[in-house]
Length: 238
Image 1: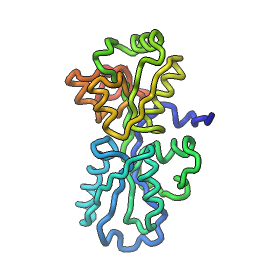
Image 2: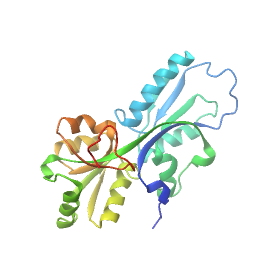
Image 3: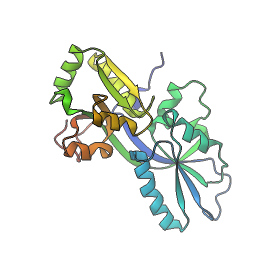
Image 4: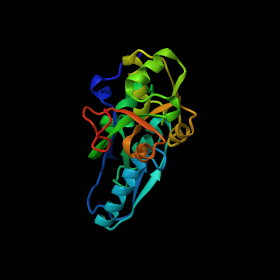
């Protein structure tokens, strides 16, 4: 069994950063449109951040920064695409902690090395996850949730945006640390949240921006955040 680095697993969050293949020539850059790959589906937190940053870069450099979603394999497909692209600076990627730091410990035979094949430019966000449940579960706080899970081993299903993502590993950590049997259901991107909202799965670790509207309208109940401190967006959630 592979061991996950403790520093990586502690307080899992979707840290988004812009990275680039090793550049051979950076003179007069950019002189043409730039492709910005997002290794996850459209509509997710990484995608939203990428589009916001891409718009600002387009205005700043007077060249189009075009968002290109390439989801799959926990972000590996999009990341590998960028690694295999010409190292001229015209293919960037807005990535998360999964493909850059987690997946090399999860996937055998990964076709890229984030330490040697990519160069980080800037971290643009550090977004904590929040544990959200469907109201039909009937729990009101984290302690009640754990008690329910212990009384119903294997009957709690949680969705994630893919194997190796922070939403998956947060659930994995909860299962280990709380001593409860939870059933993981991996999805491709936003389908996980859609099934949570419909009640097909009971809970999920999701980025705060992706679910805060549903929390505010009562469609989901927030029980805990994964950051060391409470989130300013959810000050009443431990």
